[in-house]
Image 1: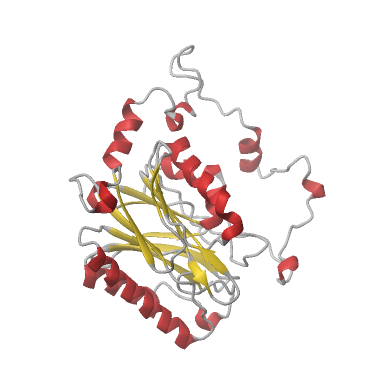
Image 2 (image 1 turned 120 degrees about the vertical axis):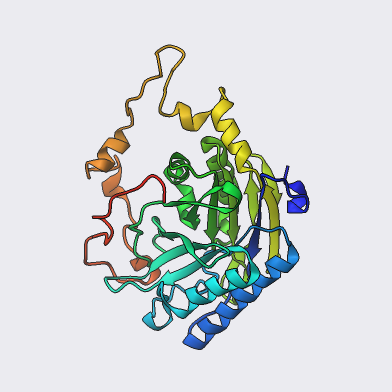
Length: 341
């Protein structure tokens, strides 16, 4: 139940709008400035469109387009004019916003970053994409983990970006850290349509979490993004779905209170709980070990597939990027991980 897209907002509801933004072409500082204005104007449209909307979500690449340009002149900084403009737009329109930037990185390739800003202009969540869409994307792998923040109307939010959602561990981490709504922003094109649908639904059902996901939309003359915003309830049911129309705003009311209720009272298919309490009917509290070899190997730094040496594509040269020469050294590696942001 989506409350007719949020028209009938319940006391416990969070009304969200997913913007299927027209795919831009951004090559210069002037074009970056103009696209910033487009996004801020769309924040205002979202507020006019739905007075009860709590949070408006823009797709990955909404500011920079799909060129994969790493030109430092058009990369953003957290204290730069683009982020400042997004904060002003949220304040002026009294709404929360989720935004995408390609972030300047003085130590290497840019980060693909996502921000959630509240209606007072405060940064509530700051995330760097953990899993760039290799070999197509040149972005530095994220080093901030998966943060969770307090959202509107008592909700808890998490944000992942595009290819992140193809890894089941991402949604599980969001839920494990307390998120009730997982936002997934993307720039995907039509070949990913089926995988988009099934992962958004599986991520929701397997983790008892509501998912709100949206892609860029339309063509920039080279690429064709697919739009297809979709909301999925914690039981895997699709609540609302967008089309392929650029600049359409898909709205829905999500109920984090019902997510919390289900996590407390469900027995059958309470998967996020049962994952860490295997077979609790047979043994008190369930088995709480870790029987998964890949997890142990990943933590120990020895993750290796049985077919590891046969993998053909292991860098970005097939997509025109030079082979990297430096090892991964996360800037934030010394900062302790927190369960809640």
